[in-house]
Length: 216
Image (cartoon, rainbow, N blue to C red; front, side, top):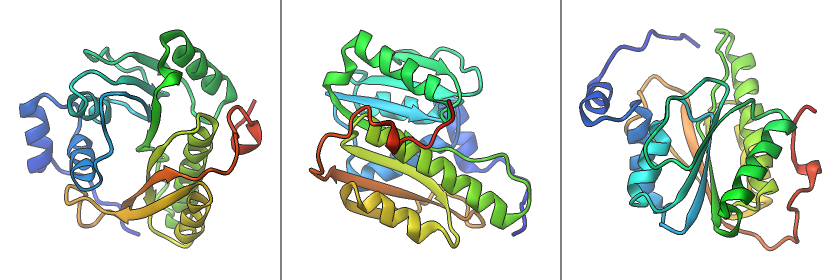
């Protein structure tokens, strides 16, 4: 797999002009147009959310009425009408506990929860390794979605040999699972998005750490 240097394109320029922090904002906008993910009475958890494009779209699509929490290893500048920004590693249990405390303190845990994951590893240039690392991040994100009983789940994934296995895992918990590559994604990119809705009634698994693929 050849990794090409990403050059500014029309979406990058449009994001800068319209005040969005990344071109990824338009990926989520296109996904939402097709799958209608958002409404105002939600709590939205934006994993690996820096620099904030996904959170901005979620805010705008809910008219600023949803509670939105962005989590990332990188420091993120404040975003208007975003409930909370947590600097932390999503693969660490301590980060999940901090998020849980924030949801409870704000009352957000009482809302319908949706988890968004636009996570990517630091690519090495070795495709098999990068695909496996990215699937791992998607599985961690699924674990967090299960931990909070998210009604909807969206994750990015690189296409490859582990993709179908990941989809089957997601289908364990959700009735509707679809793969979609938004037009904003670059043609040479192997990324696609998995959109899962209608959580299955498989019993309460909230706060069951067996569903978290995390380090202490």
